[in-house]
Length: 179
Image 1 (tube, helix red, strand yellow):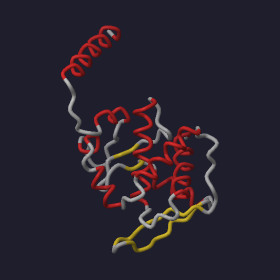
Image 2: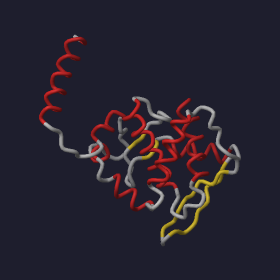
Image 3: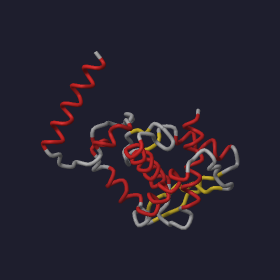
Image 4: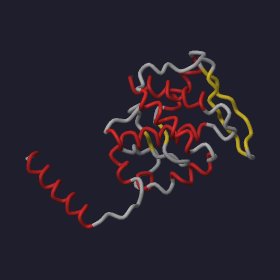
C-alpha cells in the first residue's frame, strides 16, 4: 500500500528531525503528520502521504499508525522508546536508519519542516487540546475517518455573504453538470 510506505518514511523523517525535541512522542508525531497532510491537501489538492486519519481521544491520528510502527520495529529501522516526560509516559519513535525520502517532493519535505518548526514549542498536551478545537475533529466520533476535504472546515472562520453566494452557485453548477 503506497500510503503505508509514505507514512512510514514520513514518520521516520519527522522523528529524525525531532530527535532534539524533548516533547516529541507518539502524540506529537500523529499531530504533525495530520497537520502536514491536511494543510498540504488544502493548498494543493493532494495529501503528502494520503494516509487515512481517524478521530482518537487525543486528537487525529493515522488509522494504520500502530501497524506502521510495528513494521518499522520488525524491519530494524526504528525502536519505540518509552520514557517519562512531565509525569506522562511518552512513546517515542527513534529511527535506527534514516528515511527514504525519494518519494517526496522538495515542496512536501519543506512543508513538513515548516510544520515541525511551527509546533516545536508545543508539547503533546498542547497539540491535543489544539486539535480538539478543530471543526473536522469535533464533527467526527472515536474511530471515524476524517476526510481530507474537511480541511476547509478545520477552523471556525467567518464567511462573508459573497462567499456563501458563490458556494451556492458553484454547487448548483456542479449538480447540473453531474445530473
